[in-house]
Length: 229
Ligand code: DX5
Ligand code: ZN
Image (tube, rainbow, N blue to C red; front, side):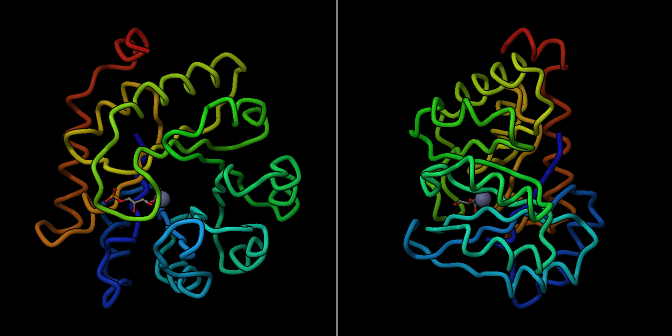
């Protein structure tokens, strides 16, 4: 299972070092949580910090846009060197056009939805995207508890993607740690976003990533997981 650490909970005073530690620990992506104080109550950072992150790591970066009218910022994030943008369907009434805009900018396309937004709101878009992100907490803050009903949503999207023969990534975001990572993997997720379980005061980044890797060793095998789904 791929890991995409969110810098939301990183120490911004030594962000470069934290990014280098994550890269050395063998993670796959860097996840940037962009919040505008409007779509979600919290405010984080924008393209300027994304560009700084880009300069400090060779890893590909994805931006999770928890902002109203996200299309206003697509070009800025592209220029900042972000490879994949993930938009909330709640903020995109014209999702087909939004996806086309991202394609025209040669960006990878991710779509996501809040924990109780019906899955039917993404179903038609599935053949058009590179990634689906299941939110397993209400967006807006790091360090929240995994919402258990997310597991059945991951499994349902897994089935939808398999049915149409899509190889899109299935990512999960919120409350992923050593206790929850197997549950989401067994349900069919291919990437875990991890904030506080990678960047925290208790363990080094390397220790945290190793603990997550060790936890995934305890998950079911692929065949067993398929049976569960
Ligand atoms: C929530 C964000 C998440 C979050 C992850 O709005 O999208 O990426 O910061 O943090 P943890 O892993 O601590 O839940
Ligand atoms: Zn996120």
